[in-house]
Image (cartoon, rainbow, N blue to C red; front, side, top):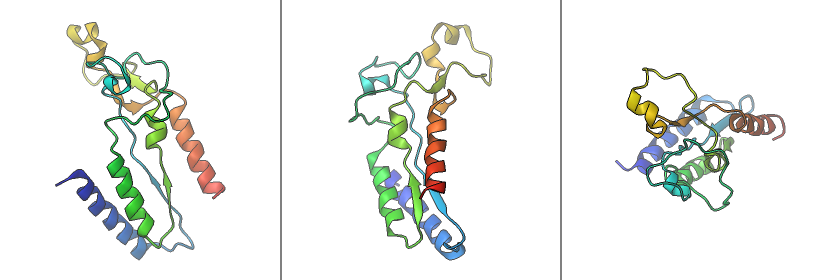
Length: 152
């Protein structure tokens, strides 16, 4: 099954459940978009074998969109959540976070298993391009949520 088709099914089911079970006069619904990864530094003009390891600056190109985040999935979110009668506030953190290749935990986290000598010699092989741990980016997500929550 195509990713977009599966995502559409899931979102439609979620919306149907929300419409049947929530009172919009008593409850507000927030939907946060997908957090991107930075596995491929070639996306921003880096090394073909690289990832976010060692990145110290965000991406400044306003047209940048990484290969790990699909615009088609974001379109599904817009389509499905835009059709519901229930007000759902979408917090789109995907594009905002795409620019922050420098905000991953990289190698600065506790590893599940001790690193091998080969991994120690090549940090790119075990850098964490999925989790966000350094200050800044998640704080921004929280600020967006706070503002939407108290200043709709």
